[in-house]
Structures are given as C-alpha cells and as structure tokens.
Image 1 (cartoon, one colour):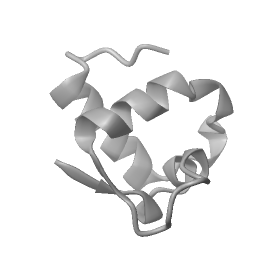
Image 2 (spheres, helix red, strand yellow):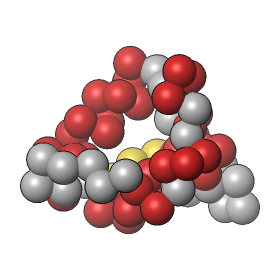
Image 3 (cartoon, one colour):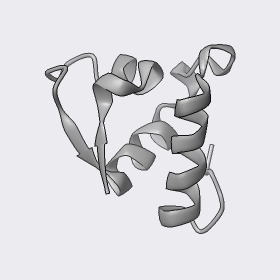
Image 4 (cartoon, helix red, strand yellow):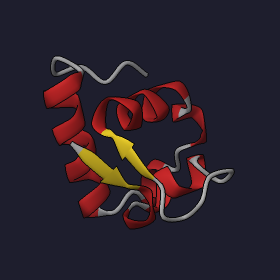
Length: 67
C-alpha cells in the first residue's frame, strides 16, 4: 500500500524534512505515526487521515495503534 504524504496534513507535518511528493509504504507510514504520536494534533486529524490510520492499524498493526 502506498501513502502519499501530501494528502494527509499530520503525516505531512511529520515528514517535514522530505519532499512533498514523497510516497511511503503503509508499514513505514504507520511506524512514523506510532513513533511520533506525541507530535500529532488529534483535534486536527481529518476524516480522511483517521480513515487512513484505521486502515494502517488494521492492515499492519494487528488492530493496535502502539502509542
């Protein structure tokens, strides 16, 4: 699964040091969210980003978001 960071504001903020057109593998995207959760503003997560997180957790996290 490919994740385009430009489509997800919080993920884009986590990837501030990468080009805006960066594409991550799903496992890598979930790992970034989990490793940097303290920087995520949960009030600013969009519906699309929440849906992405749900999908990533189901597919790569065995149903658990390790934060």
